[in-house]
Image 1 (cartoon, helix red, strand yellow):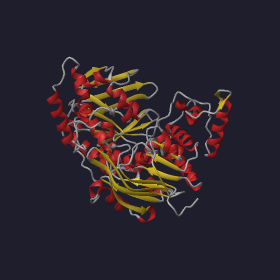
Image 2 (cartoon, rainbow, N blue to C red; image 1 turned 30 degrees about the vertical axis):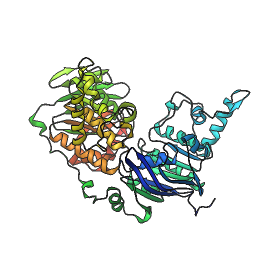
Image 3 (spheres, rainbow, N blue to C red; image 1 turned 90 degrees about the vertical axis):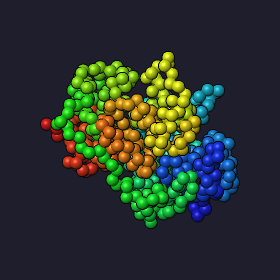
Image 4 (cartoon, rainbow, N blue to C red; image 1 turned 90 degrees about the horizontal axis):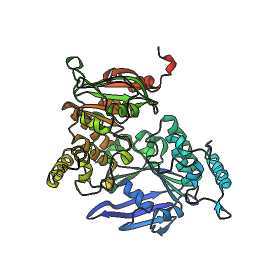
Length: 506
């Protein structure tokens, strides 16, 4: 293997959607045995480049070369046959099948005309052991954590003769220990000569893991850099094309006077088994309540309980001074409470529907099928939200699934804000989006709170929680153990609180 020559190379790569060039004359190199990061704002062309490399999109112009030879893949299957495999942010495996079945799905070993189950399990065990993983091949995939499922997806990807491995936001749902295990596997693969394309919006992870960085902006090539020679502030400015001073200080609404008003929502002893136990929280107009806790601490379960998605086993919800028992998201919406799921793809954006349809979907559902919103009014409403949230591109008829992650998140927010809610529950609203789009979302939270909207903001990034919140609810072992002012906390002190062993509690 010639490590001095690119294993994979794009030259002058151009991809158009209609008249728009979403990838415009981009050059990209990936060498054997390196971990290479692809960076850029949402909409910069990262996903399009990945799709061009993996056979999901054809190039309109330019050349893709593999090991020095021009290639043209008609499908992801053809790219995989050539040794290019991809593991996406949203794990596309089947949780109702075993680990072994997921690894070999569609390529099952055969014997006497049927599936050779013994060989499948044996080969799976050997493959997992080769990666240093102790996972029972016979166990159901859905019984494992997201981190293990991510590693199984990597095992599936390398079960072929993999030469290039694309990892698209693989750490967005993992905690620190799980990220460390993933990085161990990635480094081991790189030492074997596998070329790894690593896409992540976590700058710390890029600098910890990656050898080189390629930056895209507005579909164009900005530069290729050695990570060790590139300052972080310079990387951010290369991505944004502007100075990055605004990134450290997104606007936050002024602190509401909690003693001068009644709570809009009050939860007392809220329990939903097995996710949240005896939770007490209060939300006030213009209040941003951050929620901090480790994975599995009950963050999402708390939001789902407050929104009416999950029915309470016990406890009391009081909204606008009266006790309520919302038994569905629609019932919660009627009370002014809306929820944005952490899983945009499965529980948020409907990819095949237009931006217009996605924005007006909940409003039409709230009115019912017998009270159709006039087409002109729908278009006017959607256009106003596209302008207000700066959704790009501004084409209302474009399928929402073709937008970048940050713009999809804005479309989802527009759908919920069109309902004129009193309380907005945001579960990981900036997961998987770039630093520029992240600040836009954070600033939007501040603006909404300034206009009197109550916000629950859940994020695994503790620095982000402190940046946008007035108060922080600390969750540990499915309980709200304390609610503290954000100004009284630091990232280190908050980390100590969420990670504190339960036996320390009085």
